[in-house]
Image 1 (tube, rainbow, N blue to C red):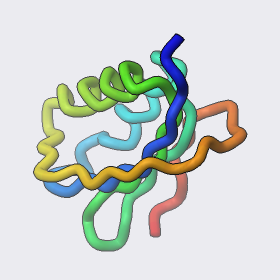
Image 2: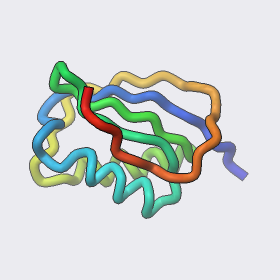
Image 3: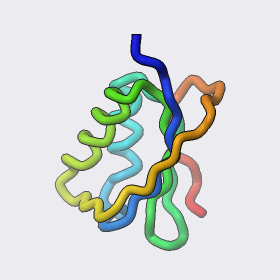
Image 4: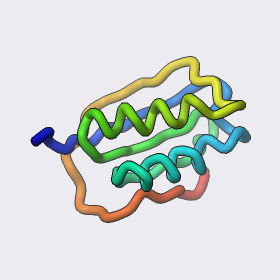
Amino acid sequence: MTPRIRKHLRFTGMVQGVGFRYRARAAAQLYGATGWVKNCWDGSVEMEIQATEPVIDQVLLSIERGHFVAIDTIRARTLPLAEESDFVILDDD
């Protein structure tokens, strides 16, 4: 069985005002990932996602398929697992 991991991701590019957060939440819920996503003051989007590596990859592919989403960079780091049961959209910074 593939272990669950947690990643903190920061996306830059055309990521605000294009449905990114809603697509991220829908994909995470579809694939059973938990975590959160939010817009940042600098125009980037920040996300923490917890699932197996293949599930996280599927969520990211679903986001990138958005018609208006254009991700330039993704900065990622691994975090300790957290206790949570859903994937939510947080208020903007």
